[in-house]
Amino acid sequence: MSAAWAQQASPSAEALLARHAAMQSRLESSPLGRPLVVDSEELPGGLRGEVFAVIDQPFAQAAKALAAPGNWCDMLLLHINNRNCRLIKGEGGAPPAVELSVVRRYDLPVESAFILRMALRVDDSAPDYLMVDLRSDDGPMGTSQHQVRVEAVPLAGGVQTFLHFSYSYQHNGLARVATQAYLATFGRNKVGFTVVGDGPEYIRGLRGLVERNSVRYFLTVDAYLGAMRSPPAQQPERRLSAWYASSELYSRQLHEIDRPTYMAIKRADRSRGAGGS
Image (cartoon, rainbow, N blue to C red):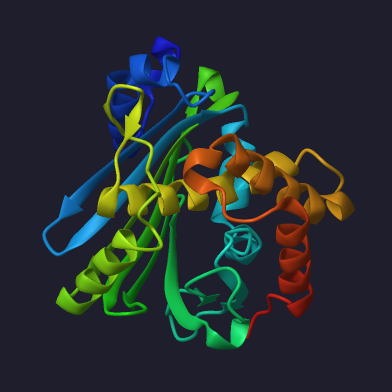
């Protein structure tokens, strides 16, 4: 970023640019095949996963798309476990919300889904910074305080965009026990992205779990933005193809389903519709 641009940066943009500068070497040497860094931590009573990435997308275009509440259902529905979504318009000064139908496993029927309603707040008050925050007090299976947060700032004079994506939630004792039981049985071979040993050996357990889900959600945003280069009529299919192809680049962590099955499920989800009220 030029010195002139940096001098004009808003405080929020400066803070995010400082994070980019601090991790630039990690981004440039990332083993994930692109400037992409995944972090995670266990919080008191919860978990947080973070993804930092440089994307070849002009900031103005990316920010406009992310700031539009109506686009978020199209993004979030790409996630393998999100089966339905509708935008709820805010009334009486309340923010809009997205209402997600979330299943525990992709092969469960949508009728078994938990309804996760997340209030959506957008901060686009600065021309060089965007923040989108989605949060819900309640969550499935003893979880709460779910939060999805995306920050964006322009790089290289606005030609590229630096994204910071975070996903966090709290869990009570019963939820933690249930999750540990899953990780000890069905999830015992699943890993995250943080390297903790030679070979390489990847992190497992709760941090591995939140890293996988954080990357899946980040890829929904990335696939949506990438598909905007296509004609509007082609974008829905391009988004599906891009999300699946990106997730398969990290098949050790993210593979769950073959491509034809994923495409069929998601086409059915899309036909179910994402509406407003």
